[in-house]
Length: 390
Ligand SMILES: Cc1ncc(COP(=O)(O)O)c(C=O)c1O
Image (cartoon, rainbow, N blue to C red; front, side):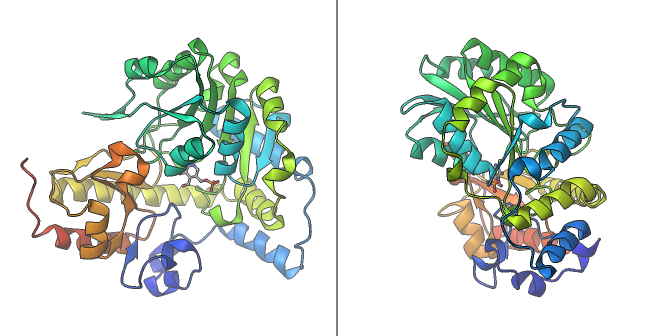
């Protein structure tokens, strides 16, 4: 695909943070943007808006047609039967998480979070003065696992919310039906609301498949707000839009009590781009997923051959690899080590919470040639490093 023809020189011309944040000799594999060119229908829709000077206020969210397009799509892809009237739009997923936390809990209330975790989960809980109820995923022989007993004992009477990330960033877990049922049972028993961030739902590799937790039963749906977006799968995070699906009126009413204006207005470009993404760009996404799966498999093989001491479970979803470098003496930490010695910018493990100490996250959504440069640079940097025997 065209991504194979992209050059580092072209990528550096992009103004986004992925390719500008670090010095020109650094290869970026950090923030969750892909290097792939956007789907042709999205490009055409954006170009049409601009060439027609069509950048005025867009129609109101319910008149965009997006709730209908979105609900038809999730029915088809995830077998999830929702009505367009349950769908609302936000500026982005993280904004909707803040709204959910504010609306569904009070100061000091507990929020269940499965660390290591996408950093804004921690930031949003702390900055809204809620309390982190940390439920770490443990690395089992087959991958990261939920410790249900630990979760049950961590929850107390002031715990209000399960802030779920499924598929999970950074471990790449795509939770199974029985795992989701276990989480739902805990939410029902403890009367927790569920905010389920499912932004990576479209980036799942066979044989895994995405199950929205709200699709488990009407009782679960009723207490859940599900957050999805076209931004990760279609590589349009910078044009900003997220979908919230309310399974019950009570949850929706609470969220709607927060003045709507705090969400900001819809962007005319996001309406155009997201419509084209969801209604016309599936062939592009299928091709991208195939390519990503090839990159994931390359990385898995590379880790097995070259970094046998490194803890790594290939992701079932997402384009993010989560690597445990604790077996190496990487000073002062793996992130800084690879940035300085390999000139590769990875995600800093500790930003994902305490269980991320000694880990890095590698974004492999780039051309195979660039990915090979990244792993080769990391290999060279590791050549003279001893394995930690302590
Ligand atoms: C789990 C998760 N949620 C939310 C986001 C950000 O979404 P948005 O840009 O819509 O706020 C990301 C971005 O990588 C993510 O991985």
